[in-house]
Length: 336
Image (cartoon, rainbow, N blue to C red; front, side, top):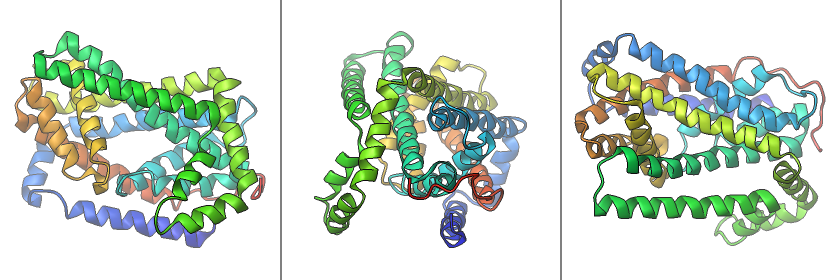
């Protein structure tokens, strides 16, 4: 990637850090008191994400490798994973900063089309695993959570929504999504002309990307399911964060309850995808989720606070990594 483009992404990350520092809903003395209250659990939460990002990077790495010899070192994929998520935390609707950055950094190693298809495939897998996580959590709630008619109807609606989304994702995996996505953009005001021009100029590249997407599901099913399994495992391991934080406040909480809290919170936050860094959405989700499981809502607010601190820490790390280890790939495949 050219240094000027990398600097644009880097300054965007710096801006996100500044915004987060000024959006904590408490003064810094109170914030520091709450951080001190966390004690050893805060470092545990921060270090937990070393492993979660490892699972995310491994999931993307198996897609990039394509069942062949490695073309890009794993440490590079890990670095781009952390930096990509750091940029995504800062963008309204998500997936608008980290993905272009990953494509541009990965292209010198594997070529533009392969970099683009691997990033699209990983993003699809990341989102796909969320729907499986939400779907399985609805069944878990039946056995763990308090039930009534209202909750039962909500669970049926969530399960139906997840099944519908899974169906459309499977269609996307079988047929590819790049050409279809550009076709949809041709109907969007302000960018329709650009989308039409781009779809014509890059027709062969887009078709190649779609063939690579379809190939993953049709011919490399083991890679498909390994990547999906790693992403789903990352969702489950991420629930340990809630478990660690709630253990600061009470010992009367189970890991299964933390899975449900995380599932509801992530679903609620993603419904409000337009919120930059999910400000307010996650806090409300934690409060509602803990309250629904007969856990004091104040515990949910505290959980969201510590989560926000962890998020800020990893955004700083991700932005810093953008300036480290930026050598060019072994091969130059800009136009592949």
